Figure 1: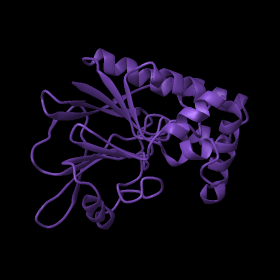
Figure 2 (figure 1 turned 180 degrees about the horizontal axis):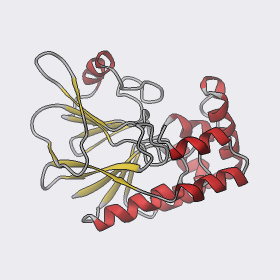
Figure 3 (figure 1 turned 135 degrees about the vertical axis):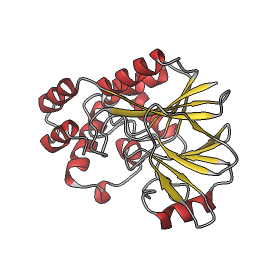
Length: 243
């Protein structure tokens, strides 16, 4: 079984389409595993929901998904994110909102626990430091955990001296052995690691590996739509820099 692992699509249809097509060209996939924040920031929330739902899908909710149908207050969002969340809520249909509302915050699939933020706090906590990673390992019982939220790809493994963050190198299959591991596939629709290309991963249960990939997409088209719809210019401009 091959799973296409995506996170932080953020209503960026061009990025999501490129990821799906690229994954198909690299051997295909049987399921899509989505780690939250499918909507927010970008110009095509409904189209992104529709595209993912065309496939066999396992998905959890992120903070922007919760905000889109009113379950999460916008008080903790910055002004740009809040403006985009309000716009998103006006665009999606009742069916889309109900579907987002049906998404769990945490699920277990195969040997993985899937969350958006962290296994301790799936909505808000970022796994970006050794202390948070150390606590995170205490909050899931499966051998592996998938997280998103930070928009930065990484691997984090346990060791004698505690958790250790590793570079998630491109196109390099990572064997998943007995060592417990946290994996972040990076952001599809709004990368924040300095590389504007859409980031994703593929898990192969037969090989017991996970691989990190990047793919270029039509950033200009996404930016033009964001400008047309009156979404914050800052959110559009950052796509070009991967920040």
